[in-house]
Image (cartoon, rainbow, N blue to C red; front, side, top):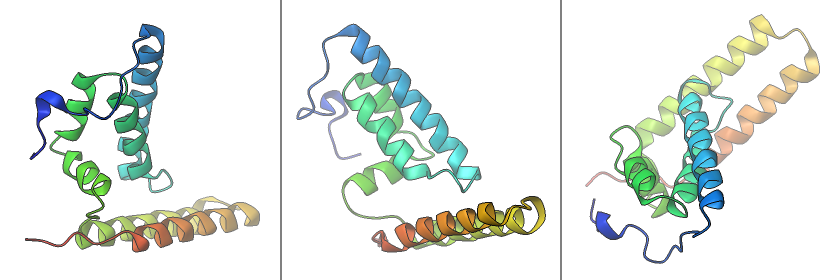
Length: 140
């Protein structure tokens, strides 16, 4: 990582109130957990939850923020997304395949209620549009 990990966020002011910092750490942890669940459950958007976790940690704990952005699984994705570099085309393709496979399987085999089927397809379409609008990360 090119950024200095000893001074992670000089422009982000940490909260001095211990209660607020604790709430932000809890919010960040819940967000990261939801983001991790979103990796395998396409109805949950992974990136927004991880970004919320990063923002919460950035305002509350250098230790948790450093762990998140240097994490081997998703740290580089958060960094690239925050810097506007985008995400790799392979990840976009994989995400869309899993998204639609899960949504269509659910709609066809498990959900009998038509309005819920429609809602799931609309959500999947929205997530698809969002993913396709993200810049594609170019390999060096």
